[in-house]
Image (cartoon, rainbow, N blue to C red; front, side):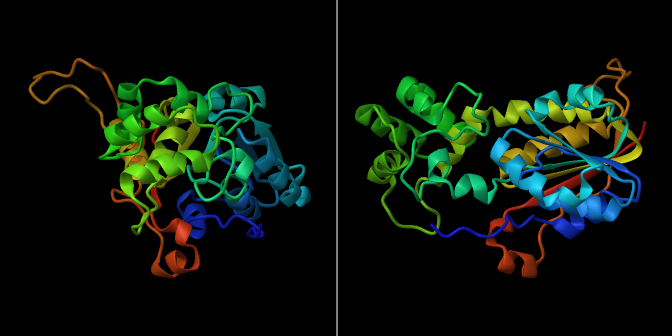
Length: 308
């Protein structure tokens, strides 16, 4: 199996620029992966810059650690869920911080390894877990949920318009143990042609559900405002509309003083803005980047600055 030598980080130049990376700063990469963004942050914050890298995937962290060998005194790597962001930072006395980055994309280590079950291109177990300590797998959802629950999952997390038909086909053909078994069932409903692979939305929905991606992201984002120093920045790179909508909603809420309904004459919520939007419209990759790295085509980055 041919694999790329490294994962190509998306919006790399823009990330370093908009996070305002400076020498001696303290930064957190909540999805360090194989270390592309993190390495650029370290290079831009030398010689005294410090980076805390978090990832659920221990294999990715092993790759990242090798890339950071020249920065051993500047890096702390933690194999954990970024929902524990605040407690991790306190454990390592890594606060306040000058910048926090989330890159919500998949790495080549995950996509190109059939044993992880993320790709509909290879035969592999229906797993899709980011971390091996998680209990639920894609197989457990596919084989356990009712037709109604499966349809709701596909429609909500995959925006799959034919989710009910796919769910019906899955329930009729259970049990499923491998990726290509599931792909075959999906193709029975959607066919085998088209610009987008017919299994794309179903696999996305299952991956999001297995890893509880949306609830985990919401929980982690809420912690960032308590960790950032005044002027510190939060940058989030998302890859589909559901993620971007969640990030946009969070940043809009935290950059607004009053969250009361418009008809309420006097503010009762007491909310004060904690963030300032750096870019009101998301940053997207240049044409050159999209051509060089097709994986970047759907990426959107939103950035906000801490006020408190």
